[in-house]
Length: 282
Image (cartoon, rainbow, N blue to C red; front, side, top):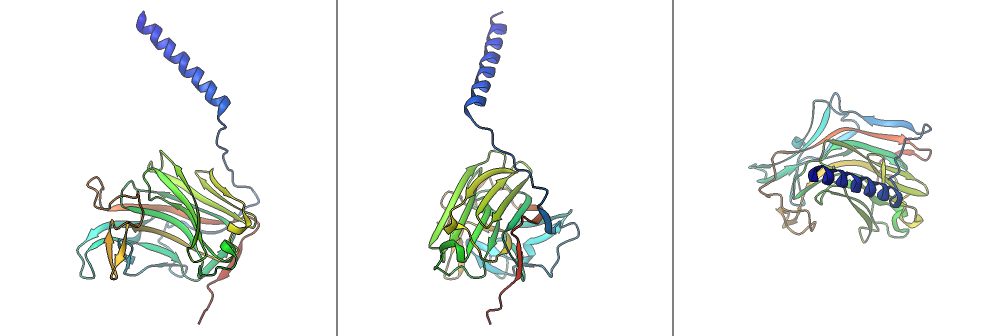
């Protein structure tokens, strides 16, 4: 009888707490893609990827590891960026990869990726937009900004970031996401002339409306994984200070190889989208 009473009491308290939470906390608003947003670009990776549009970076030292095109490939209808340790004649260490648009450029628009982020320490995956020239400093972010739609460096957290003025200026938002490693999720940016809105599974993470922080400059799309660390005399040194809190790539709990798996990337015209091509600075 005592056990039944305790069970009923626990259930009553749970209902009470649920009701109180419902009154005091506003439920996160779910974003629905407006009907007027039209699909303007997509890469579904069902049959590889269009090499006229995309470029997988060739072998190059990058932070605490190496980027290599060999680490970027399509499998089972997905793009895979694989991170693993290699004893290689070009340099032994951790190899991963990056892929970006060749000559295609865009300004404004709605950008979305559906992907699966691996739970490892000492490396992070990212979906970002990058201008050809970020060194301009006259108009804050307006004359060119790196827009990180998401980065997964911190455990069970994602970071949205704006870098501008040659990286002397930056703004960011870090959000805890308990389910971020549980299968596929969507990350998106709605970039308009008067706002930036960052989404996770259609829920708003961060909204920016300060005109000084909204870029008006064309960008290319970038998908990557990076190893925590930095270059010393041109060679990557894993775990060397670059991103505090990211952890170490040689963490004994890391399972290698580690895959960043992308189902698709899409761009929608949100009424402001402008297409262009890479500037020829020669």
